[in-house]
Image (cartoon, rainbow, N blue to C red):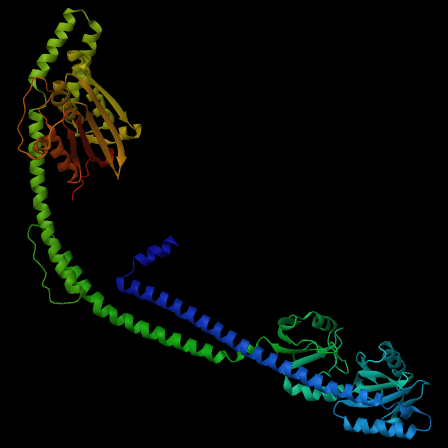
Amino acid sequence: MSKLFHWYGSLGLATKQFIYLFTVTLLLVMILAWNNLRESESLLRNQVVRDAEMLVSRTNQYIDASLDNVENMLLLLSTQSDILEDGKEDIALQTLRKFADYNNSITKSLYIIRADGKVYASSQVYYEIIGNPYLSELYKLALQNYGGINVSEPYNSPISGDTLAYVLPITDANKELKGVAVAEVNLELLSMQITPMNYQSYVLFTKEGNVINRLQFNDKLLPYKPSSYPRTLKDDFQEQLVSLKVGVSSIQADSSKSLVAVRSTTNRLGWSLAAFIEEDYFYKDLRKLDNNYRTAVVIWVAILLISAYLLSRSFTKPIRRFVEKMDRLHDLQIITKLTVSRRDEIGRLTQSYNAMLERIQNLLQKTKAAEEQKKEFELKMLRSQIAPHFLYNTLSCISSLAKQQKIDEVRETIRSLVKLLSFSFDKQSEFVSLAEELESLRMYMYIQQVRYGDQYTYKLDLDESLLQYRILKLTLQPLVENALFHGISPHNGGLITIKGKTEKGMIRLYVRDDGIGMSRDKINKLLYGKIEQERSRHRFTGIGLRNVHDRIRIHHGEHYGLRIGSRLGVGTVIRIDIPLLLDKDENLGIWD
């Protein structure tokens, strides 16, 4: 992945823009095409399923109406119990033929089975020749629901073929059983009548899962048992029919074919009708739309390539010329401005380039002046590093301690003075670690405490993680010295506290004293007024607050330096803002 980003970053601006636009737009087109295709598929699927549900519902109503005719016919037969009397055989046969002819659209054969076992059939000749072995079972079925109509499961009748039977007991006025009326339904004709009403394939089945309709030989969706006649569904598929939920669901015809099944509610007999639609049927009409999207993508890619070429000529070529002119620029002291001949982004870029050159010249002049000022301040600091009166007074103090035979104090004072002088005269670098600056401050404060006793006390409160950072030499000592002799000394003693922390990406050091304080005018004079080198026998150096403030700003920029807050009679706080610098950073200036 990193190599890919590296390769992309090495490309030209126009190429990057082309790749970016191409990728983003292609992704958007693909997403839109995918969503539209899926939405179209969903709409088509929903429409087909709704149509199938409507057709299944109407087909189910048609089946109910057809079967109602069978029930009505049986009910009429049951009211004519007198035709079962002896001597009325001809009337019974004539009545059966009449009812069979009138209802031949749904009824295949009619039978009346008398209580004594004698059978009358609408096709008496065929019955006497072929017979019907199921009549005894149908007679028993009728008696299971005495007074009501029963329906058998599908079976194969010798006369009617694939059929099922409606049975109804026939009784006289005294409710005495005279016989049973049987009507075998013409399932083949029923299948032919409801086939045009459904999509592709359908199955009419009982609550036990037995198929009622005759299955078509040209049906390629449903799985059949091989070499079966009449055609019979595979057992595993037939078992799935019973578990289908009412409405729309999916069913697996075989390992490679998935079907959408639309099942109707059961009718009064517990039959259900299921229409089947192949899953691939929903995608056939979408192929044309898919091809249209592919053509649109190809055209879009061609247009994008041409647009990228024209963009490269109109945009990148002027930029290359502009870069060539910039590469010829070597001497910043002598700068020739570019001619602005355009009003578009390239023209504005040229104007900005000319303005940038002016700012560079101004910054070079400011930098040169700052360097000269820096050297001047460094020379002043070196010339006034050690005040002779301080050295004289310190040596006098050592002499006095020696006369008093305070050997340890003499030894420690001399050691502190030597280290302080060595620290001051070290010219290797303007920067020292904060730990070294604090050590020189400790030696300075020790000498002052030896001279003046416990009148001056100070306390450090800094995070040890700050001690590694570099600061300008003699940054804290002049501030503490100022607090001693202008804040605490007139107050006859006090405490100086030095704190430090990192904040907003910089080091902030605080020098606080509880001395007499000073007014705002005096603070402004100290930081922004004319520098007056102050000489004092008490001071170690001649470096004042203003010098510390200017040295920090020269080295690090105008965002850094001193901030002073003070209240008369309360004390003064000086905040020093300096950047986070390590050994490797001390030669890097921070300029605005």
